Image 1 (cartoon, rainbow, N blue to C red):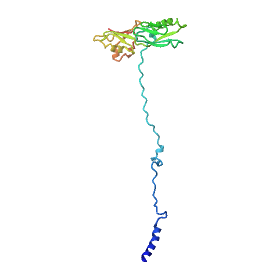
Image 2: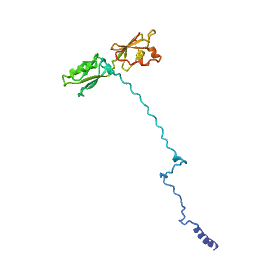
Image 3: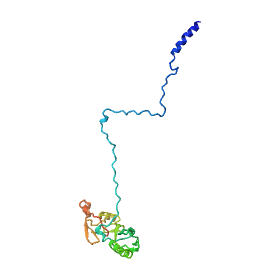
Image 4: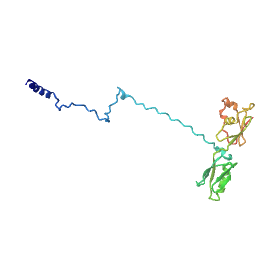
Amino acid sequence: MRSLGAVMFIVPWLLAALPANGGAQAVETPPPSGTAEPDRPAATMPGDADRPVVPSPVAPAVARPEAEKPLVPAAEDAEAYTVGPGDQLDIVVRKEPELTRATMVRPDGRITVPLIGDIDASGKTPQVLAEEITRGLGRFITAPRVTVGVGQAASARVYVIGQVARAGEVSLATPLTVVQALALAGGFKEFAKRESILIVGRDRKARSFNFKKFEAGLDFDSNVALRPGDIVVVP
């Protein structure tokens, strides 16, 4: 009887000790995987709001050198310039776009002109060619107005003679000064009179060039650009 009484005493005490929710313990459920946590403000230092915003440095643009332009006779040389093989000619027929074109002088010295056919161009000036083309087109269209320009003077030459290593012609496919032409001719021979160089143009007018002064840095302006047909004479 004592054991039964003890049990009857212990059972109510155990029931009172159980949690009120039926014995289930509360478990903190972690947030579902993949759920982003709310953004937290970045930590700031005192005085950050008063600091100026410094932009990131930008690399300066690098200027690209322009490609070297082909030599085109100057306006004062246009009338005297004679066309040669390899020259590019710009033939313009006013109000006739189908006849306006750029053409190259062939190795045989001829060019092809629409409606006219092949004509000799080598050895003629642009003005003479324009007049010849005008007469030819006059058989097909009324009062044609034609101009001929030299787009690229590939046949242009100058000549270096006298006391240089390699006397002869020098191409003017790109612009050249007197000193550059002398360098392409191989430089001076031993007894060359460097202070008495002459540049003779097609107009038969001579200009002097003193290489010794140029070399000493006393007269850079005398190192002029050469024109087609110029002759550099080194005595």
